[in-house]
Image 1 (cartoon, rainbow, N blue to C red):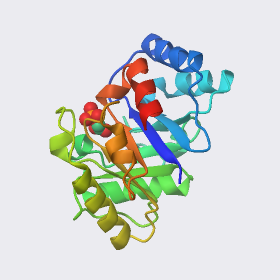
Image 2: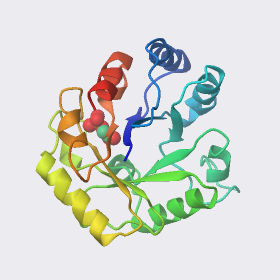
Image 3: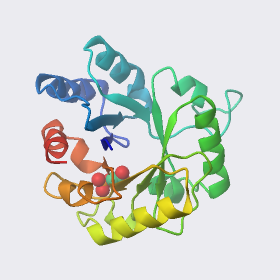
Image 4: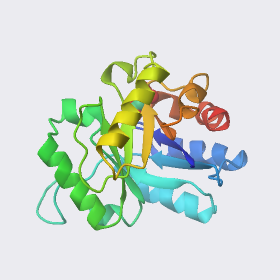
Length: 220
Ligand code: PGA
């Protein structure tokens, strides 16, 4: 099974900062391989640029979005529809705890987002905060991200991550891959990627610096 290393840039980086980061990965020849898949989720504004850079430089990095509209294209001011995303993205992160808490995204809305994404064949990384979470039909990749571990410098224990991953896979037969996210660094990544039911990591803060992210990929 491939290890997925996903960078979640959140609301960080301008185009020139994104260029600098990508250039460093290119110089280090960091790419997906048969055992690792490198994935990057920048802000909407950066998607066209990041997509073109990766294509022009023939890099093997998958590009995705951090959010998607729960509606198809239409009169929904401020939203980006799955069909629009699919020009630039191959995956989308849905249900991040920051979306749930700061933007009041509820289960119904999240289920609609997943439906929209799957309709245009965007791969979904569905975030859950614990083992009791609901996972919509058709989701193959789940990221377990406990709220108290996000951005705090205190990752969850590998035991908890393993337990949640096992339980989610048991409860939802469509789920093939479970990632761990929450304060992952180059020093801790291996504690999670070596677990039998964890197949990768979703990295926020430590993905912003190219060198730190390259170290995470190398150590995973
Ligand atoms: P963090 O964020 O690595 O900064 O804790 C992870 C995430 O929110 O996806």
